[in-house]
Image 1: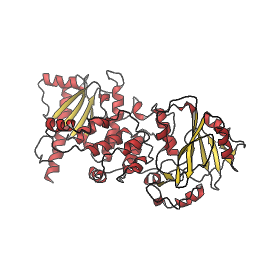
Image 2 (image 1 turned 180 degrees about the vertical axis):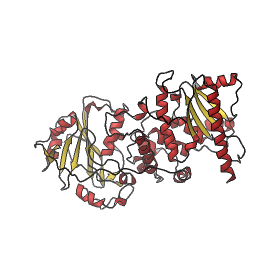
Image 3 (image 1 turned 30 degrees about the vertical axis):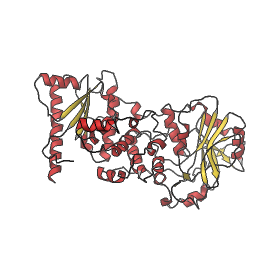
Image 4 (image 1 turned 135 degrees about the horizontal axis):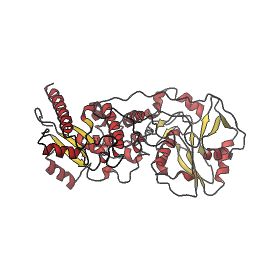
Length: 138
Length: 336
């Protein structure tokens, strides 16, 4: 790997098209900014995210991944995000077993919560960047 | 608990009675000149043996995509094989109507890669032989359920070496009915006790990379895994392990010159995909030509992930696989 010190972390986000992706669009129309390294992938429902997508992102160079969907109980497909919760919680447990828990996050963001989306994503970006810079100086 | 003692060739008589119907089969173990192997018995019980201390393949693999009705198949297999059979039933890969699954107490097995001479074939001899756990395969050393308490019926061995047939379901009752002796109270303590709780598995990526650096991506571990059943496996296409044009396209499109880190990703994804159904039989490690300690990772992760949902794969055919169901009020701390 080439020297990446000082580079912005690359974060892949899987965003449910009914809530989180709408929130990101709203954040755009409100002229709110979120970090450039964050790349959103629109999925029809957060439960569409096979943990294989997350693992592939990590192994192909992403510094961190988040999966974001509607709040539990608000799923457009009634119960999709309950399955997401189980799968991603288990995946986090697995990442924890490999001592890389910080690489995966799960957010619940509704379509109206543009500010919350920006705050969550920015906080995540800053923490990953901090950890990455600290790792480089050692 | 009531059970039937199996003495003086009672098992052979019972199984012969079962095989007297032309549509009845038994999947069990055959004693050969050079070891013990799986075999289907039809009409005759020639060279049948109950215990198999040599592990090569998980027998549930032979049952995948068994949908025909009419024939009756009796499984006389190890607990890990019966548990894998249960998981495949839950995943709709086996039609259980004509299957009677009988789990037999398993004192442990040696790897087919190791020397197989001097291994006894009877239960008490095996229990003595495996007093030294280093003789066992890693998977058996950390086995979560070696007692024949899963399936429709079980054959358990008591401290004197006498076998007992237990029934756990209606089909199990029909298995017990094959024996011509009367039920009796089984002794409270059997040769094999409950397994200890496993420790929480913890490792890191450096260790993982070191252990898997020898992997040649032959995918034998996937092919021999009894519960890794997808016909359209993710790794058969070009999306996850690109080669040829797809590899060039990927390099040109993404600008990444590194060879794809395929093997680590392959094992990581497979580890998650089988996490809730893995029975920890160690067939993957048995199939690995490179001697990678796959059991340590696959079993460690699956025990940890199944523990989250208080689930144990194959323990109870009535349980639902955790990823296929949910509770509304759970995992409150899942969100970051």
